Image 1 (tube, helix red, strand yellow):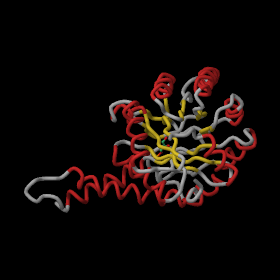
Image 2 (image 1 turned 90 degrees about the vertical axis):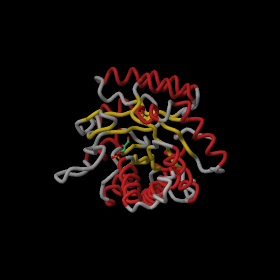
Image 3 (image 1 turned 60 degrees about the vertical axis):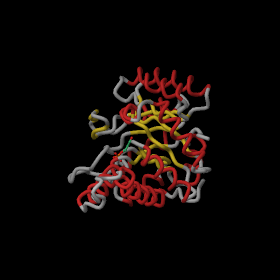
Image 4 (image 1 turned 180 degrees about the horizontal axis):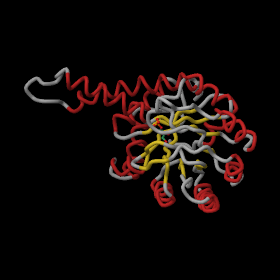
Length: 287
Ligand code: 13P
């Protein structure tokens, strides 16, 4: 059964580790993440962007697929199904469809409007025991065609949003989605420490988990980060494994490519990446 992300991120905060959010795009991706979580006895969050939700034929399809898979693959570790960077309307839709967690990204609204909308969603989600992640300071890079500027969040605005009763808070600290440019100056730990001080006890979320050096990941966890999002790295590893399989012509035995064989190297590659991240984030054996 899907669970809210609340208990898992609170436990991670207390235990000084982070739960990984891995974005899913199809059946193979979902199966790879769920099986790896079970094999490593780790809690896990499945992230679904609005674009990925549409691609997978809608949120109800995603809920049906994940619930069915959890039952048939006998997944017993805690799993949250979470909307990633949701709009206000998208958040309402996934709550109806059966997601167990939502991220409302109101970072592009003026702070007053972000507060109003976040407050309303906390009320609606709260009635169903669904966890809510909010965002302050837009996270740079490109996510589903939306390009943010990589802001550094204002710690007072973080406190205003945290005080509304969100489950967890994503705050921009110089992190960006996708690959980091060669001249990237790194995460802003001074601001992270200030946000942590002003939002005592609030689990913090680090977006843009692809390409952040390991020592920075560990320092971020020591400063209150309890959830880390990874998307691009799984995409790259999936694409690379698939490309190599096609280039090797492995399945051209007169019949063309068997889709199940074609997607298997990508599935295995995602499993390896997810395991590596769970070990780095410290969530192995924390289910
Ligand atoms: P990356 O694509 O950089 O791994 O970031 C993922 C993310 O933050 C999703 O919200």
